[in-house]
Picture 1 (cartoon, rainbow, N blue to C red):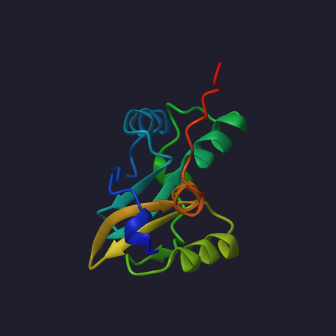
Picture 2: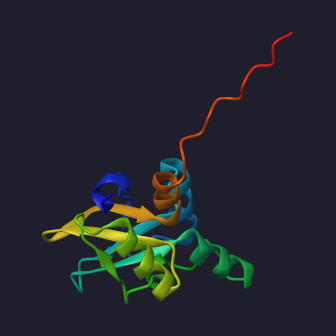
Length: 133
C-alpha cells in the first residue's frame, strides 16, 4: 500500500504569525494533529504538531503570545505519494516523529500520520457477534 492511499488530503496550512491558540483551534476544528506552516518570506514549509503545542503550554508559555514560527519544525522530512507505507513508517521511526507532509510537485497534497498507517495495517474491525438467546 502507498502513502497516497493512506494520507489525509485535509491539509491545514497556517502562517508563521498564527498564535498557538489559533493553530490549536484550527487543528481541532479540522480534526487534524498537525498543521503545515508556510512562510512566504522564506518560501519554506514547516510543520506544527499537537505535541509542539502541548510542550509549549506544558512549559508555561502563553498560547496567545507564542507564534507558530517559534515552535515550527523546519527541518522537515517530506514523503512522496508513491512511497510505500513501510518507507513512511521507517522515516518516522528514524526521525522520531509521527507526521509526514506529503509533497507532489511544489506543494503539499496531504499529511500521513502514524495513525493513518496503523489504520491501513490493522485488520478491519469486526462487528461484535450477537449472542443468541
